[in-house]
Amino acid sequence: RSPQKPNKRQLLLGYLPMDHALWAYELEKKRSQYSAFKDELLVNPSEVTRRMEMTISKRKEHNSEGTGFLPRAEIVQDEHPLSLGKTSVWNQHFQESETVEQIDRDVKRTHPEMQFFNGGSSDESLKRILTIFAKLNPGIRYVQGMNEVLAPLYYVFKNDPDQSNSASAESDAFFCFVEVLSGFRDNFCKQLDNSVVGIRSTISKLSQLLKRHDEELWRHLEVVTKVNPQFYAFRWITLLLTQEFKFRDCIHLWDALLGDPEGPQATLLRICCAMLILVRRRLLAGDFTANLKLLQNYPPTNIDHLLHIANKLRGLVPC
Image 1: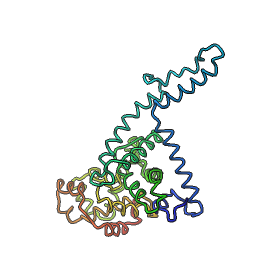
Image 2: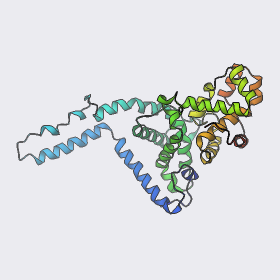
Image 3: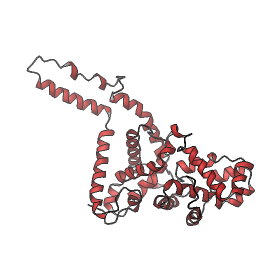
Image 4: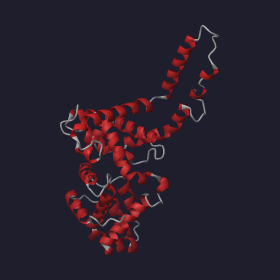
C-alpha cells in the first residue's frame, strides 16, 4: 500500500514522483526490483553449482533411456571451485571477496557509539546494500566511506513512523543511496581525480568560491599558512560532511543539501565555504598546524546559522 505520508527524502531524491497517484506503483516496482537484486547478486557460488548439478541430474535422468552418457556440452567445468575461467561464478566470487571483506570491516566501524548501528539487522542491511551496489557498478565498486554516506539514509527510513516505509527501509535506502551517489559519482572515481569533474576539480571550486567571497581569508589559508584545501576538504566533500557534525545535525544538513534548487554539488560547496567563514577569526590568527587541526576537527556549530551563511553565498559557486 502507498504510505499515508512519504518520507520527504524519497521526494527530495526523486525516488518517488511528485504525482501522488503513482506512489504505490513506484514503491512496489522498486521494492520488487531490489528483492530481485538480492536473489540474483547475493547467491553463494555453491548454491549456483548445486542448482546446476540438479538441472544436469534431471537432464541425465531424462536421457537415461538413451546412451546413458551426459552430453559434453552439459559438463559445466567453469562452475568448479578451482576453475580459473573468467566467467566462472567461483572466480568472480573470489575476486569480489576482498570487496565484501572491506565492506564488512567498514560497516562494523559505522557509528559504533550508536546502539542502532551496533551489530544486528542494521549492519546486515548496510552490508547487503553496499555489496549489491558494488556488483551493479563495476566501474566504481565499493569505495571506503560509502558506508558513512549510506548510514543516515538507512537510519531515517528505518525510523520512519509509517510502518510500510520502515519495513522496506533497506530497499528504499538502496535506491536513495544510488540517487545521492549519482550526484557525486565523479568524486568516487579514481580515474577522474585529475579531470575537470573529479574530486580535485571540486576542491578547486571550493577554493575559488572562498577567494571570490573572502580573499583575505583565502590568502591567509592557502598562501601564508599554505594549508592545501585537499588536507581537509577531501573528507568534507567525499563523505558529504558526515564526519564533521553530530549524526542528528548531519541529517538536518542533508535535508537542506538534497532539497536545494541549486543542486547538491553547488550546495555542498556553499556549506563547506560557510564552514570556513564561521571560523574565520580563528583561522586568521592561526598558523599551518593550528589551522589544519581546526579544519580536520571542526568545532560544534549551530547548523541553522551555518545554513544561513551558506545561503548568502548563493549564485557564487564557479561552474
